[in-house]
Length: 518
Image 1 (cartoon, rainbow, N blue to C red):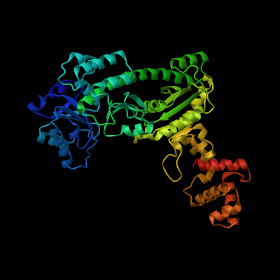
Image 2: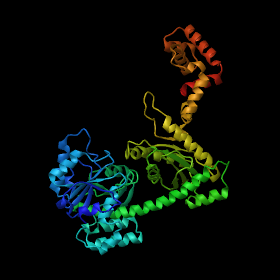
Image 3: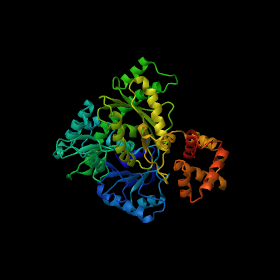
Image 4: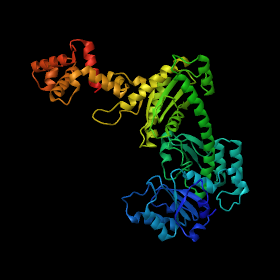
């Protein structure tokens, strides 16, 4: 394949920004996706370079683009395909640098994934490899033929990885998930603890298997020991694993459809779903007779489609649990919900689920730090008929997770909240929708809700301190540096304006809740 062949493929929608006949007739021998400022040491002669231009910013000087393109020329790259998504277009300084160094540059529109370009070059189906000339490929033809057969037979990832690196002497090798789960390892690779595996995912020696997947769904090829292997060969091995990954994603998509049907049945407006229908839906999801059930709901960005992947990846860390991940028909954009079935009954099952997920959450969140992930977890539902209540609990806990703030900060105290965490009045109130909290505070406080009035602000402060000190006049006066009579006078004013009697416990609780809802 030559560079000009890519321009003839209308589905890709590539645009030539600069390139003469000599550049466009160069043969492509491989593809490397990179966002390093200096990618030269990772490139092979004849490769096509894909870059999302994350390394460049509008404030950067021309020299930065010059260094990047010079590295491409020195490595023998045939062309640069620059993504438009990051900057809404391709910077002119980059085009000019390519012109000076004789590197063809093509723009990649937002709707075209880098994976589509890679598939075009390396073939969409590895089943065709054995019928193609071996010259453009780094893997030996017999290896490609064997891997093609294994993929067609649906072999397990351990076998696929082992056979893919067998001709290299079967070095220690892993396929790791985004959060450090070991998907596959060779017989020479010792078990890798999750924490260490999560660190290995971000190592420079680790290669992304499917870079176009969401940050939570990506797999990574990790070789902890250096091997004398051309980078292009590792890319081809990664592409084999990507084919296996895409097959598993298709199965996940089907499973999510069944899970969404289950959630729709659970969330039915009627008082309870028909037991028979609910049983069939649980069975279709592989969750029949796996009670007790726990429900978890996760919210990401409204425009982010990775929430389902994030929740799926997190739940894969639970041992001895089945789960079904889907979307609620009444859910918000960017919301995903799962029903978790516990195969082994234990009194601490939900505690184990919550603890595991809370420990994992910072790692999961770090995979896409720009998108906060909040989650709510229900208490166990001992029967399928109790799933409706568990769903209500999970969504309430989710609202609490999104509302809770550490004192004096804007940061959430925790991005994941279990119903068991709501053990105080303050924690309980965080699960109430913000507009309901605001309305309650306004009506309970009456005229005092208008804190733009300096006098009202003073009374609210006195009320808060008085309640904080359990209604002790002396301690409140000491904390406020006031005379006790002044505190008495101010509390009388509060009672008059709110219509409450602060000698009564229920009225104290009402006003305390109103203050917490402000």
